[in-house]
Image 1 (spheres, each protein chain N blue to C red):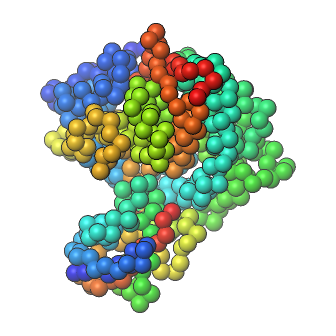
Image 2: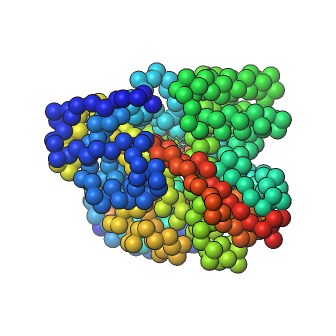
Image 3: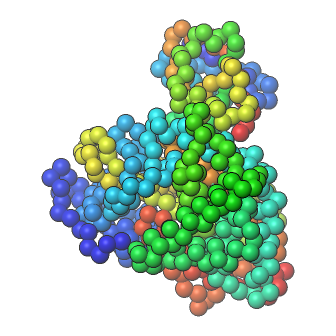
Length: 404
Length: 106
Ligand code: HEM
Ligand code: FES
């Protein structure tokens, strides 16, 4: 993130539409980003413009966000970074707009779907237990690092059929990638990830397998076989899209559960309610802020958005919108109705959402079987990261040594 | 106008609908909520979850399919010649009495 990218108010933005917010550094967001966005939803203009980080709009209400993300005529995915990255790299299918997008999306959805996740489930269970094995005796761990970062990596390595010997190397890359590092190091790690994927593609050419990468290499879009560069691009997105996001969502949910002993007891007694726990946790503790670039001038609720403007849709705030979920700050697994946009909506709705939900469910099930009661130690300090992908970088937990 | 729908349980229902609505919206409003999956894209022809089978004899009354809908249906291994994504079927007067069956959960 460049140091000072604050701009002057553009002319098409009215003075009363400006609200000063640094989505990366705002103090309240760094204190607790979900509380912070809920407070902004109540005190800031419904759609506002901040001059920080290259200047961008922020949208926080469920309905407005949904209408923007479903409007491919005015909003494009060609640029998704705030401040603008002006990068030439295209991530498939994330950066494509309809109608070009659908064929690339379909090629991936053919393989990443409910059947794929169902087949993976025994492996998810096994991996969750292996990671719990590593920490259970000690009676304490930093959840974010030991489990949050490690579990989705295990899963990724499984469906990409990567050798287990490389687990530590991979966990290392992921852990560093998602901690505060310099931009140069960030780009370096990206190249490392891409070269690992490239290496894997070469290996699969020699000996094809049953893994996702091998399947994508056989795939085509509207009759044309995918090129290696395209398969690489998918691989890179799966890596980025499926690791930090799940890690953070899982860590957020465990932060809540650690502080809610009655809920722990309830889920231990009745594990069939764990999916509701996962869903309520997603609603309350979203992860990603989804951006778009305006491709054609548009007026929304009295706000004029101009071609080239960046828009940040605060997906985590959508689930906290009182117009959709009454008493939105209450964590309640018994809600009769629950609405959120954690996985976005519209053409780019997260393809991994079935997998993400399964990972969270399976992990929580296995954990509670073995560590039915746990808490945040009194000395524990939570360290949050705000910005486009929010995370809890440290979550210390403690329990009776050896579990139950 | 009315749509006749067969649910996954086999139960049949007549659903009130109006021209201009999408078939999916009409089904949801009319008590066939199962057409809307937790993992839906919100009716943007991008997730394939709102899949229905249209009675063969009703097929000629439907507007043609876009290439986007075709792309998305391509991922469903339970696709048939009479498959449609209900979010992408706009209803019109001439479609009164349409018969559809909700495809298996996906
Ligand atoms: C809790 C975890 C996750 C969250 C919060 C999340 C969030 C999102 C969001 C918000 C988008 C929409 C982007 C947009 O509107 O432009 C998205 C897209 C996507 N996600 Fe996820 N995701 C998660 C897990 C995963 C996993 C595990 C995978 C890997 C299988 C994955 C793969 C993808 C892909 C491939 C897309 C691109 C879809 C497209 O452009 O059509 N995600 N995700
Ligand atoms: S609702 Fe997603 S394709 Fe119809």
